[in-house]
Length: 164
Image 1: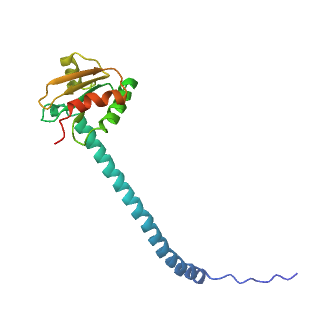
Image 2: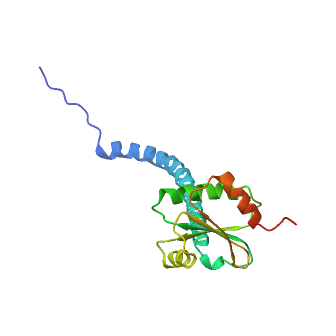
Image 3: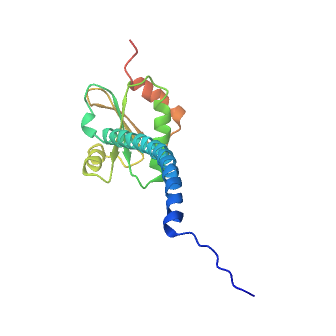
């Protein structure tokens, strides 16, 4: 048998054809990726805003200098590692939703901090406790132990100023 030579395309010609195709695809892929990355950037910005807002709310809850600022305050003596404290926090927040917005302020005295443990020691109470202060910072009531949200609404309403 006789060998026949096959024609092999030159590198220059073969390489030139895909380059034009790649440019068209790269524009499309660039636009598609741009939309994808733009959507991701919007989502990250939203998540960042949510995180900042959440951190600010947590910082405000732990600011015990707000006791006696003219608004009644419910202060939970809280141990972050305690399941009963987390349960009381959940029930307290649910009961607070029954009150008009802004009627009372909810604060958390973390016993792992110097301020939180000092407040607990000043009032002689352990964690899993709620301290109810009037707007002048005078202690009105102490609620010890876990409570159901229905049991908390009454004392919270009595603490809140009457509606005008």
